[in-house]
View 1 (cartoon, one colour):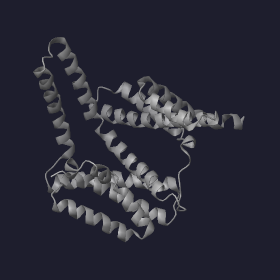
View 2 (cartoon, rainbow, N blue to C red):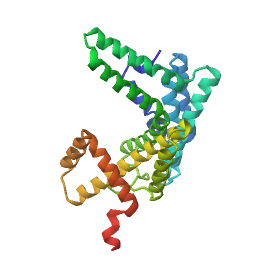
View 3 (cartoon, rainbow, N blue to C red):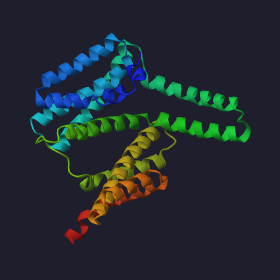
View 4 (spheres, rainbow, N blue to C red):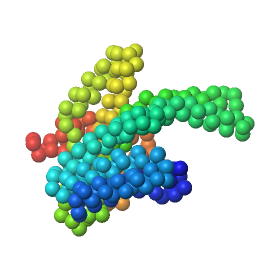
Length: 289
């Protein structure tokens, strides 16, 4: 039984269970936060919803850690970092437990299911009369998509961990907007270390030279994906900085960002901007000069 399948709105609560755990830990103590997580986990076990346990446990443990760190007033960036680490480690632990005790290799089952999705899609299009060259092109696109999804699973795990920690912390801040808690810098001031540019270049060179080695290619491919995402965020931060500096109205800033999301090439431009900003720190270049 998959609880959020029958009540779709609960899917958000399950994935963002870090928020109530964080608030509970901040307002009371880590003990109450752990009890809340334990009760929710026990409830899912009772109703045999083993799928929902994964997001609840991982995001919940992230919330327990962040709630404790909020209470002892650690810096906001450290709270997010440790929230990410807890999510990532707990996710690996949950996969290990499922494999050892329930004989469920979740990642492998997911990878094996992807070709079935392609076949089901092809059968659907055939049933409505689509065939010939159009069907071949469609199958080629679907096969490439499935290959990409299968290879990017490590990146997806990293992305889930980052989003769980960062979104959980930011949304918790909204619920505790009247509380004096540590907060992240404004988005327009987010920057990353120049060292990541060097890592990006080295990973790109290694991938280009050793692409025939499947293991090396898989590792460098996911490193490049992760760093590309980081630099795209850096690019958006740079964009937000200059829009704010130009005095653009908030609705216009939001509109520009929304439009950029629908233009694929814009992501590559922003990634380049992010790489350059990480290297030269354009936001403070004039001040330094």
